[in-house]
Image (cartoon, rainbow, N blue to C red; front, side, top):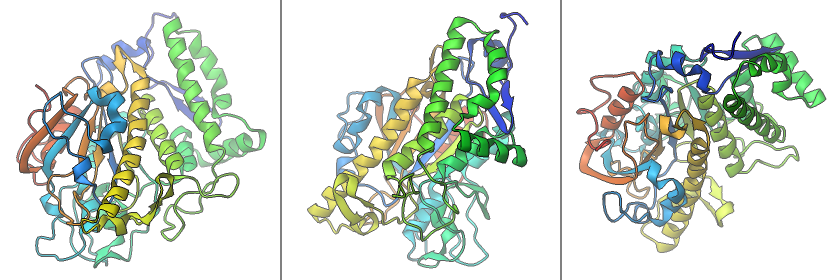
Length: 454
């Protein structure tokens, strides 16, 4: 076949137990432009959501002025290199995260409302109910365009039964993604299992054989698709070959890092210590864990195996300590700071550490060239918490950052201040529209969110 002939966006390199989707290549452009849910540049638009628990130190989070010339607060400074690619959003509210007559349980509600905008039914029995989450509303409409309708990841395990917060089911605290109002979409916390799922061919026996051979002979998944890769290379121009080599290098680099991580026994080991074991038997560092998960999301978006993803840095109410930044205290305990400066100082260190990991994710997306721009240009990545201040447990003025240009439909590089009580669900309506899953309303929305474009 001549080099000029187009290659389908769904072309996959196959081998025993392996299925490797391709990144966006120039030779695919005409075919992609004719597909649904693509940006003006012809690339698909993706969305992802990153949740952190316990709120933030707002004094070190909210910029003092609105517009494009705002001064980036200390906690957000790790994002300085990509400030032109993001929006800091102030004033948005999740009213259904409030008690509204249901009493205590703010942490459980902060996770359950984060992507649903719905009031969770207070129960730790079989009657859990909250609402479909925005990621799954998108997956329902555009999920058939990719290998996986969505990808749910996390750095904390957690069961979906029992009482985890003042009478609220653990399902509320441990999940932000809900396929329906009664069904949480459990996350994968083991990066090795997530990798095998993304790049397996769905045939369990072949995947098991592939994995055993890779581990015993220290092979790469690329070795199993080598013949297909060689045939494809002969059909590509020099620029596309360079992009493919870069993509393969990314896959191989991630494999090497994952080889140092031992798989966990269960994604629902709620009592297990934080972090999976590495090759030495020590618990994997939180930074390493989050970075592996975000790298998986980058590869998943780059290869278009999914356009929808979510990542929980930790479960709602997490009491993880952060010795990496000299905070041996539990996060949840610190969040009840009682305005003590020593506690607030430790919280802001945790906030900045979390933002550093988010910045790593955003910068990785920006490093991938796609069409005339970057992968980040064709993404919308929302980062934040379902609680504003952990001491007050309030749900207005949520700490939210939106990274990416949504396929050119979002004017980034600004701090936008909204009227208090503006529903955060208005943002979800706008995001759904940009990925091709338009809705008239979502949760308690009152319409699309204004000012995303100027």
